[in-house]
Image 1 (cartoon, helix red, strand yellow):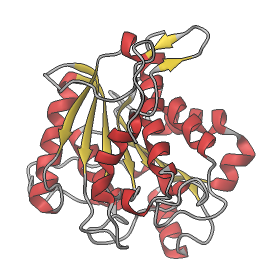
Image 2: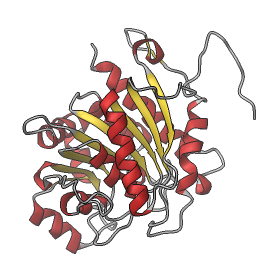
Image 3: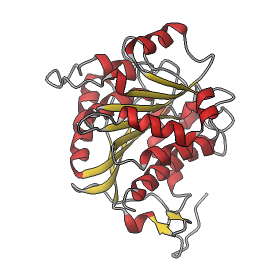
Length: 306
């Protein structure tokens, strides 16, 4: 269905191509080939861009703010064939290029394997994840990016020896019945700060975000990557996530967390992962939630200027 046109109500999305500098740069990273479950996640960057146009760019405040007035937002297109060693190397190089000219790089996946090359490309020193799962598996898959950031050197970029210190990793939303005891012990042994879904709800979003930023953003010249795995959400609001669990975060909780973390200047990159646009509900609620998370990240970026 064609969207209506109103010159007094500009739509989100449709931002110009990246030309070397920007406040924020969007990048599609349609990885899917190593997913542990069948997925059409490679269709998601296009779907999120289309869904963005259902929304505006005005924040009601007060004060009233239009994101397009206070930010230069650009779209860097997609990484072509981002899977495999060569695809990872291309993604790392592209994110590195964008990071040199943009304050915040927002990568739209794709499955969760994109977290590894995007965080490397942004030279992340700390990591915050919104995820029901640890993603500490061995091997190369969408279940392994956190382990890989701690342990691996990129196969196609052996001179890049970047590692993320596990004591600078905070995992928010880890939930019962979605993980194994072995990976929970691995996280504890490595010193990863795990904040379960129950702890998040007991303590509240503000308190948890403050701790997460303190831990992930510690050290000299901190650069934090935010991984937003949408399957942290309740299956009712994220049916397009193959691994979403009933009882997960509500949409408002994910949006609030995203805006709060995105408002910190130490956060230099973020990704949206594990949305399968081809498996979404008829109303595209999961894709729409992902697109709103893009806008929440941009809102956080705008808040840094106040």
